[in-house]
Image (tube, rainbow, N blue to C red):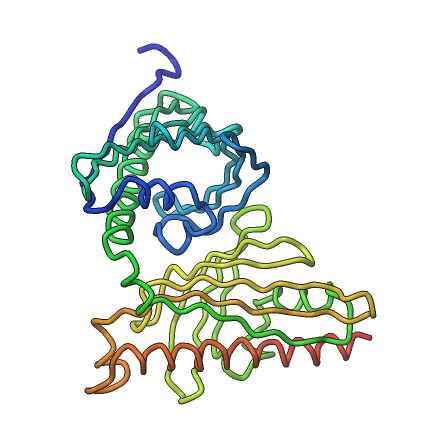
Length: 315
């Protein structure tokens, strides 16, 4: 067998949606964590008309990987090509394309192509890569289909909001309090147990047991990506029953007066099948949305209040 043999895979799905909607969902990478289960955080490094570079943090077969990709966008051909600049081991190379093929006025076939090389020809490594690429491809295509076909109906199940507080102190002190979540069980009354594990540069796995305002216990696990003194973004990978998706961000901005404006942002999706068991018979989406707004907001505001006290004590 030739060392570093290139391999290729192809996955496809039929979606009842317009090509334009599908193309937009694929191109707008900022929304990927809310759409694609493996995606934790994506941002732009460079943006142009048809060429761009993006940074991606995603779960791959239970591991958190990070890479930078160059993408070529072709709206006319309904195609997005991508190539990782510095692949994350055990990948030695990784690239591919999203291709949209209209099959009717409101129907398309979406193909997701990958080509890759492994760092070696170890059989177990190759099996891991093939399993991971297959699982993520199937997951992403299924999620793309769901979101594209739901269309504006997702507005009923999605909720996005943010709360902002002003803290007298530098961003570093407030950031440190949020970043050092291993101490939260001792510092935050709504956190009863916590485990924080560093799994890469600026990447953490945070597992917590928390209490909501009404005393309901929840166990969650999140992947967090930390950008020192500026922001911490996260995606919950283990969720309470009432949510099928939850992403968030802590943002720290000094205002030039010695104070810091801190914003806690949440985006969540209600899991309609669990509303009755979580909130009681007769409850619906309005009650679920209100509960999540109050519960998530109360916990993040409580965290920010204690972060404010922590920063004040360090002045």
